[in-house]
Length: 100
Image (cartoon, rainbow, N blue to C red; front, side):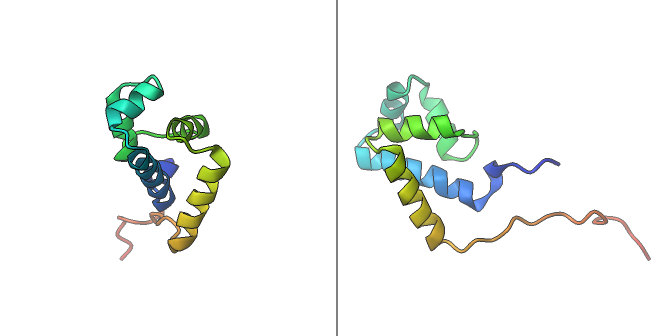
């Protein structure tokens, strides 16, 4: 199974920061979606971690919330440093086999 960043603690920090920025800007999901010309369901899916983000989307959303990208990156780094890093668990190749 291919590992994606969508299921990492770091990804949760990114979407959490984007949600907090939206709320700090005083926007509903619908208002935020209108600012980036997307449906409200797109913003909702991002915020619950059900949709992937690329760097262009992050930059676009941060700008819509009145935050320049360097400021966003600094805030993200602060949050990531505050959270202890835990590498993702990998499934052992022999998991589920009975070698008795």
